[in-house]
Image (cartoon, rainbow, N blue to C red; front, side, top):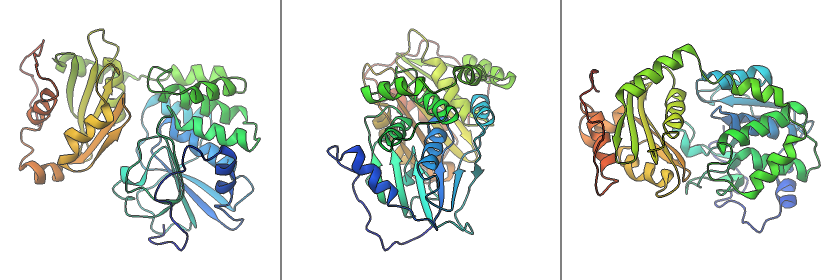
Length: 357
C-alpha cells in the first residue's frame, strides 16, 4: 500500500448533489487495465456483498482483484454465506509484500483498523459516519444509508449491470442483515434496492444462510450470557470475559434487544488482547455511535457506528495506560454505563460466580 500518492486526495466525500452517474464515471476512472486491486473488508454480509459488487464493477477493466478480510471468520451464518455463494477471499494482517497497485476499502474506513489508519487508500465506499481523518482519491461515504450494499446496488444500476443470482443474493442478504430487516436506520434507497434485488436473488440460498446462525457452541455462550446478564434501568449488559470469536458478542447483543424491557443492549468481551464492546439501541433515545465514542474513545482504540448499532475496540495495554489498571475492568465498564442514566437501578444485582477481569 502506498504511503504517499501523486493523485489528489479527497478530504471530503462527494456532496449529496453529486449524481450517481458522475460518481460511477469517476469510479471507473480510478483503474487501468494494468492495475491489481486489493479490496479490504471486515467480513460480514454487507461488506462481503459490497466487495463482490465492486469486483463486478471492475470486471475486465483491470488485471486482478483480490478480496482481503482483516477479521477471523467463525460465525456460522457468515461461513454459510461464503460457502454457498463461493466468495473467494484471503486474510490480511499487513499490506507488505503484496504486489497490488490500488487499494479499496468498502463498508468501513481506514481509521477503523489500527494497521491501516496511516495508509493512503485509492477508493473508500462506506455508509458509516465519516471519520475526519478519512481521505482517498475516490471517497463516497453516505451516512444515512442503512447498508453499504445499497450504495453498491445503485452503482450497478447506474452502469446498467444486471446482477447475477449470486451477486444479487449477496447484496440482498447484506441489506437484510445490516438494516436488521429494516428495524435499524435505513432510507427509501435501501428499500428500493432491496425490492430491485428481490427479482434476482435466490431465496432458497437466503433461507439456508439464515438457518445457519447458531451452533452448539453458541448455545453455551447464550447460557453464560443469560446467567451473567445485568439490567441497569432499561439497559441489558453482560461481560462475556474472553471469547473465541468477537461475533459471539454481536449475536448476543442482537438477541438481548428482543427483550421487551430492553432499550439498550451492551455486550463486552476480551479477544486477542483487546476489549470489544458491542452496543445496540432501540432508537427511542440516544445514539449508539456517539455513545460508544463518548464512553470508550478516552481509553484509546476505536469506537463509533450508527444510531442503533455501534462497536468499540480498545487494546488492553491502552486501557491500562489511560486508567492505570485493568484489574477491575468490569466494574469500570459498569460505572461508565451507569453514568448514562441519571437514575440507575439494576433489577438483578448479584455477585457473579465467575472471576471478573
